Image (tube, rainbow, N blue to C red):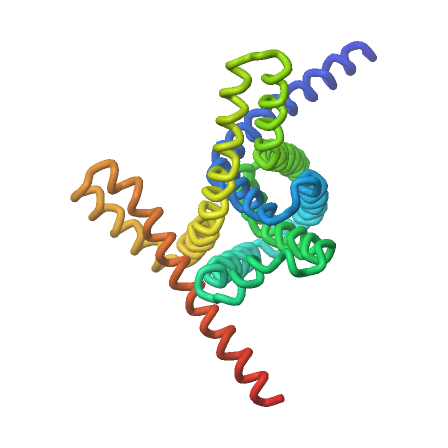
Length: 300
């Protein structure tokens, strides 16, 4: 009897693990787009930090990201059970915040001046601001990943939902910040290979080292640009999926683009729609923020 019970238990565990693996695979596919945005945004956040502090900053943000998900996973489960209607409004607030941050980077000149003059600030304080900003942005993107995953496993038991959410949270965090750490140290890897090539007279190492040194700053510049674009795409995309009118408008625009440009139009139209919506929403928020700030200062 005991042996039969043990075999039944093992079979149940195997089935449970198989279900979790299957659901995690589906959720990973659905959140892959957000993962790309998360990577671009977090690599962008490390720009401007001195080379010897890049990995400590990435590690600090990674720890913050784990804490974000430690908060978000149980919160998402509780909200899905008790307050499911609250998920969409919270996501919309996060999406609007991303749009605002992206527009602030573009339209408010003082932000650029502050970034360019970062070397004149206290480096410890500047680094702290970088980490805080990265963790804040990570919170919004992590929330979207968690909600997308929750939607994927909505029909599963609460235990399965919790396990899948935990697996996705861990995989996404390790994957994103592992890649960010590798990206920010590309120039160090190039310098190492270049030095090694002088000792071993290896032409291949020399060429590879030079290529990495040349590629590293360009890659960081691209990721800084991609990170800003991602803010608008993710923010606009959240608004589109949350507001039915915008969603129907996007579908109509996509159908029209498909009729004109075929599959290319079908792929690009939603991205352009989300991006323009994100820019528009961000610009409105920046104008409101500037107007409020000036009004507040005038009344002081």
